[in-house]
Length: 481
Image (cartoon, rainbow, N blue to C red; front, side, top):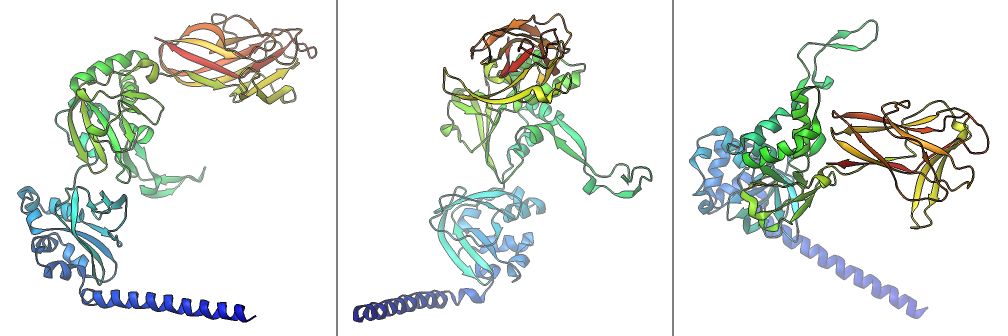
């Protein structure tokens, strides 16, 4: 009991010492910063020796009023007078550019310098900058964590340029005309009901009626369906083809996107050309790997000797390339349609359908398939939809697993566009215990389009014995260039 009481007393004394030490540290910090906390951010910057130029820019841009208010807290990265001596006169003499420039040094909230490895910070001008322990963007801290009544400010040895982002860069570029024109061609009008003016309600349907011409916004297929390099919050590496390499790669792809109109072919070709040329992550030229992997799983070769120019942007890097020699096998990978994901059936035979999970005894891998037996329907078919098949030849394969019977062995065939199409493939016997791909032959798609594929069973209507069966693990379509 004595030792127990003694331990309790010792513990209480230790806690009291710790609390006292923490309280003293807190009071010391507040005591040190008291004079700072009596002035706002603008006053602190204006009164500081060596930051008078930025203080004058705060007044000229209108941000001084914001930083003098006490309604919110801010962080300001203040370039020294020496750093601002080289600021271009084009910025100083343009109100909009000046406000954009100054806003690139101010953020909502407080960001203290310290052991931060990397923090991407949204600035008041809509841009983002990367802050690390020793600085922000390419500027280093010469003084940090200087407090005011409404925030914190740091002094930096360089100013932070308000750069274009990757998307703004291509739209403002003057030396990549073909790529710029193609990407702008991918613009389209989109109706956004939240931005439209409602004038009434349709009495028949109850649907809202909107004023003509309202709610229309311009979107871009590359940004929406590809990679949104207009997003400031994420960093990207964007490979832009110069005019010569653009023509080479565009002409290489366009035969695979034949459609009924020139514009739709141009849209498809352009989108497929550029969808793999932007990847997440910021890579300076020296840090680029020899191969990038796009978000679509396409390998993009990078020959650094073909980089003609590199540009730092507000959300990454743009590299102008004189060549990006795509391997067509990477650009057009095989299309796989899983057997357990059909898009339709000849008739409802739910009772005869088995969605199975099996193990391949040769590899030990688990797979799913669809097996149908004794469905009593001559020429029964299962339909699969292949979206966006290119105008090219395809080699067709399937894996069809018969692990249920050695006799009778059933037959099935693959048809394109129609279950009654006699010009595609013939019936194939499905052997027992074959887990390998079976080559079915080759077919040609004349124009880029969605294609229905039909796996068709035997032309008999038995309801027993397993002679009418269909099994699909997957169908594979491999481009044949």
